[in-house]
Every structure is written in structure tokens, then in C-alpha cells.
Image (cartoon, one colour):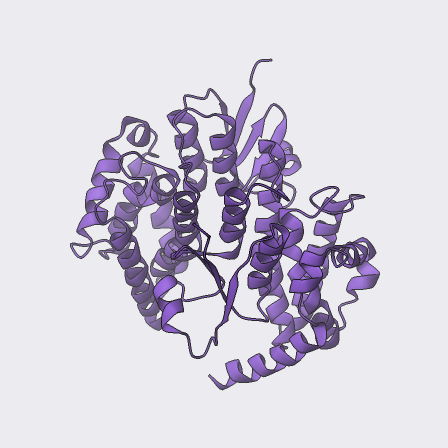
Length: 220
Length: 218
């Protein structure tokens, strides 16, 4: 039976992009459906009634939601170029860092972007602490996955193209020379063709995040 | 070489109970070390330096943190009996999805109920809606795992000891709203792995009242 793979996403979502990278890495053909989140399609609402969010992967008519769940599904279904190792401890480590990004790192950096005054100071302190943990994890490694990229690399991947956008819009330096391993990782990761070929357009991101910034920091 | 399995634990933690149920299901012998969250041991800080939280499973000296990640680890390593996750990738993805949903919702919403602040009424509504969604997913199955307990059952059942607290604090009406879920909870307790690990609802209520006082003092 011919495979039918659809991916519901938006042009800018980093959660959708990690799924795109996984699909490209494994050479899986798929149809991309870019949603307008202010006007969600009936199909999206049908496929993800619980959260009504992107990304959603639909494989032969069966939907899977939540990007980390989707990534595990992709890795189990298509065995070439694995993103998770076989060893249980190594697997647990990759999952730990993926969760760390989504639950700690990303929210703390988003806090730097959106908050003001004392709350921003706290977000900056949290971000620096979180970045330091990530920096240490890279000790002796080219990628989080070792010699090749894995789940954690795909999940941290947003740092490679979105941090510079945040820095440009806010005028703040978020990843500076205190994080040489992270800066080196961003360089290595960004040089991989399947990664950089799928970065959302930088200028479009600047416009988008500039608009967000103005919303969170209205001129007084 | 015999396996050395240690669990850094807090008796009241529903997250630690998930791990205990998984270990019991697989028949694994382990040593349980009680932590005090207001006075964390050196071992905890060394084994989970990033989050400094329990549960932590230490297997032959190597730590694994985050309860669901630990349960997945246990399921993979001790795969000789009682599989908790389905082998079919799609069924597996659905189990991961629902356990993640439980993680995103129950503790946080529940906390707003037992902390008893202005958002308690709103939290009560959200909790009932969450349980209704979960109950729909259960459907007419005996367990979320089908004929026997599985990953989602393990993820959710520890919170059933907290229903008494939710009812006492905010009169949630869980039994009236979700009778199938209550029946499922009773059925789970017929499994020794669950009944051994679950905490007593009254003890949890006492614990949470104490915790609330301590948090308010901070």
C-alpha cells in the first residue's frame, strides 16, 4: 500500500520544523499543510481535537499530535537514520534533554523576550542557568547525539535560527562567549544541508517577532 | 552480575508511585530511599543536579530522572514480562500522547485546587473537563492498556489517591461526573503492583495541608 504522510504545521513553528527535519533526515515523502492558526482548518480540528494545535502528523489517515510523540513515532516506523539510540540509558538521556528544552530552556528564553523589569531579570538568570546546563552536556561531543544528530539536536535546533532573531529584535545578547560549545554546536548543526535548507526565512521571522515584541512591550 | 536498583523517593509523590508500580509489575527488587524536599540529600543533588527532584532511578550507579522517562526505561530494560507500552508504533504513540496529557494537566490543575486561592473554582471546572476527556479515551476498555494495566494506567492511577483531597477542598463531584473513571480506579487496585504502591487518600490530604502551610510561609 502506498504510504500517505501529511504534516499540518505553520511556516514558523519550531515544533513543526523539528518534525520536518526528522522526515527529511529519513527521506520520507510527505504533504505539508501550512495552517493559518487564526482560522484553523476543519481537518486540523478533527485530527487534534484535544489541543487544536500544530504540528500533527497523519500517517495513512491516523493522526499523531505533540511533536515529541511524533518524533518517537517517526523513529519507530521508519528505521533508517535513527534519531534515538538503542541503548536504554542513552535513549533516556536524549528524552531528558528534549523535555528540558521544551519545559525549561525554551520557556525561560521566551520569558526574556516577553517580560519586563524584575520578571525579565529573573528570566535572564533562569536562561543563563539553563544554557549552562546545556553547554555542559556538549562537553566532548560534536552533537547532542554524539557524532550524528539525534532527537535532542532536533529539539534544540530552534536555537540555531531563532536566537539570532530574538537578539536582533530585543537588542540583548542571549548566547554569548560564555557558551563556546553551544556556539560551536549551532555552527555545526546549521551547516547540515537538511537543517539549513529548511530554516524559515530570516527576514520573515524578524517581521513576525518584531510584531510580537511590540505587543509585549507597548510603547508608553 | 546482579542489578542494583535504587529509587530516590518521596512517599507522597504520585510521580514516584508511577515508578514503583512499574518496578513491581516487572518484579524488580529495589532499594527505596526517602528524601525530604526541604532538606535534599547529597545523593539526590548529585544524581539529579539539574532538577534536584524525585523520583530518580539509579540503576547500577547510573541515574535516570523524570518519571515517565524512567517508566519507559524500565519497560525497555526489563522487557521479559508485563510490557507497559504497546509494540505497535501507532498504539504506542497514543499511549505516549495520553500520558503526556496527564502530565500537562492533572498535577498543575490539582495544585490550584488544594492551594485554595481565587482560581480554585476555575481549576475545579478544568479538572472535571480533563477527567471527562480522559474517561472518553478509556471508553469501554478495562484499562487504558487494554486487558491489563499499561503505561497510561501507570501514569494516572497515583493521582486517584488525591481525589479525596480534590473533593474535600472544592467539592469537585468527580464520581458523579466520571463514573467509568472511578470504576477503572477500583479495578486498578485489584492489581497488587498498584495496591502496594498507592498512598492512602487521608494521609495525602494531611500531607497536602502541611505542604500548603509550608509553601505559604516561604
